[in-house]
Image (tube, rainbow, N blue to C red; front, side, top):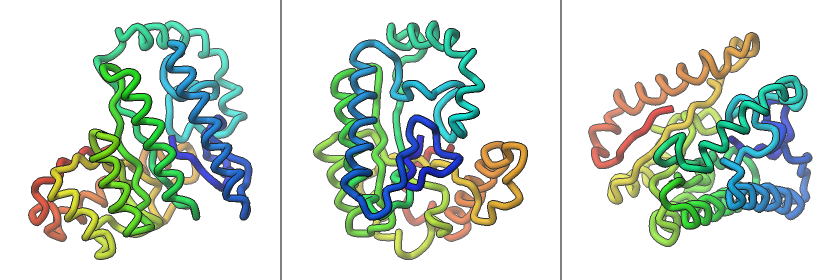
Length: 239
């Protein structure tokens, strides 16, 4: 689930935040409210963090209108979540959220990472966490990587298949990935809608076609640029 600051139509209903404008503190308070509700739900055995508004899985679940249309599935989810709470549905679940492209990206990343680290600490056999990284802030990205891998003891990081239209091979990200290589970090590439998004606007083609297309493009650039060869200690996971 990507926490969006713009209240866009394609943001999950549960995670949609009122337009922040210049009110940074109000936006962060809203994110903290969702975090606290999510942790309370897990602590009470209520399943994962998606909460109300999750109908057919996490991710870009669509507008509140589509979420309401799927409410008939909620009873079926109750049984599924009971298995999740009892630890029967899987051995462990890895949680991650992309920091997105916001003006408060570093704060959002810290907030998400603290929440996932707390969740994993409370339920170490059920949940693991991949850290969000503020990639638009090179210094902040390195600081959060160090904090996530050290203080928070997270299992890896999540980056987007394109960062505001820029490839992961962009020279501005090279110092960050060199540090990931030095540490042997596991890097999960989360798919994004391709930069030229208009062809994917209909028929839910964004996640169906656009996501695997953009992941393939990202990996091809990593391969042909020599980055996979130059940084062999990074463990890549593709989405």
